[in-house]
Amino acid sequence: MISLTHVFKTYVVHQKKEGLKESIKSLFKRSYTYIPAVKDVSFTIKQGELVGFIGPNGAGKTTTLKLLSGLLYPSEGKIEVLGFNPSNRDEKYLQQISLVMGQRNQLWWDLPAIETFLLHKDIYEISDTDFNQTLNELSHLLEVKDILRQPVKNMSLGQRMKCEFIGSLLHKPKIVFLDEPTIGLDVVTQRKVREFIKEYNKKYNATVILTSHYMDDVKEICNRLIIINHGSLLFDGELNTFVKQYANHKILIPVFNSKVTKEELQRFGTVIEFEYPRAVITIPHDKVSKIASELLATYEVDDLDINEPQLEDIIHSLFGNEHLKKEEKKSTI
Amino acid sequence: MKKYYKYLRIFIRYFKMDVMYDLSSRTSFFIMVGVEVFYVISTIIFFNVLYANIKTLAGWSYYEMLLLVGFDTVMTELLVGVVFANGTNALPKRITTGYVDYFLLKPVSSYFFLTLAQPYFPSIVSTGFGFLLMGIALSNLSINASLLNILGVMIIAGCGFMIGASIMIAASSLSFKFADAKTFPRIGMNIMTNFSDRPFQMFSAFIVKFVFFCIVPVVFLSSIPSYGLVHGVSLRYLVISIIISLIFVKISKIIWNKMIINYTSASS
Image (cartoon, rainbow over all chains, first blue to last red; front, top):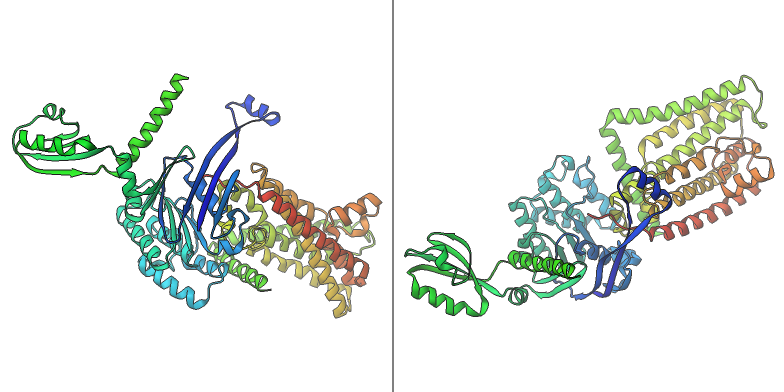
């Protein structure tokens, strides 16, 4: 359904130096830099998959989404989505996709949201029956029925985002690209949006590709994870596999009943939190049972939890290491 | 045919939305219409001053000239209202802000959607002043134009509109390549409107005639049609206007498609 084969995208950016003199100089002579945003990326996605596409800022996530939706032409490589080359922007292809960007809006600011929906009805040639049915269904799911006739400028960010979703999904797209859809939303609305995405996927068997900086989005919505950094793919697989592959430690959380100090606990592993009687210790993956039994034998323990590390922590350590490796490489050069 | 019906529906929808939007801000609406009226009045004053000193201009009497001014007001306001205001003029900003993404992701031809789909209501209202001037001029000229003649005038004016729109769209499409140059749409607009209210007989020298009939064929927008309304439509001009408009539309589409490849969506 979606296939990328050795895709590259390089931006040519004009380098503007500071100062008036340099500005005048740049009228006659300009220097450009080539910024590789996507480097040799290949993957395939099947119909109905929920894929989390994550990476730090500037990793190439949005560029990849724009390549997939046809907004950008790849510098090299082949992209095929639903049997189309997205950059041809075939109307039959555009009829089946939707791109929702959390930081951009498509609703008319001064008019009620329903007016933009009616515009989309004409753009996507949706019949009256289909339009009314889908609008009812989506507005019910997102709980925005009462505000559709209210000017967009008077809506809260959460209400606006929900209406953006409706506007983007009225034509029931087979593929939905979501670029940070929960950015800036409160916790309750974030949860509602996540539930809605899952519900939409289930009902229409739509493929959803989601980029987000909120790991809760990825954990709750996606069953597959694609991690990109500096334009290159770092990981592509199931969420659980990722945790197993990249988390070389587990989290031990004992609640003590006898006296213990932070210093004493250091010999078991890295103490990342200590507030008597509770401690949080990271320990190597392969020594969990040994350390846990040693701890239980040494101290009186009321409760003991052994957890997998949080996705955020793994991602953080992964990108942190990447950063360190890069710095090391630089210093050796 | 189905495709054109879809585009017409989108155009009408945008028109309704623009009317709702403009009417929601009353002051702004009256100022916008006021600016257009001021422009028309200043043009009439100019020709009144001119005709106080001369009897004819390139063979055109005062009322013939008033008809031309009225006709040109209608045509230029239509170009502003349909092509320029919410279309080509908005393009550079939409490119730099990344709002073009919205249009490119919709299953509608970008050529139509980004330039012709969104009419500007105050300009459409301002065409009324053009019709008023035409009415005054025609009642003083006592013309008995046949239906066939009126049809011919409308075809030439339609071709003139297509030529104007093509030039404006082609000029504005350069913004895709030179994103920081925001003047292309205005250049396209000025090319069309700066000379369109002049009698075409003024362009008599060979080079000038070649420029205004073939390179920038502004004469087909107002001058030739309004002359045709008074003196009868020339079959030669009718055929030429159709051929030239088709050529310009084709060239404009080619330029648009070449330029849009350069679009690099602004980062979010």
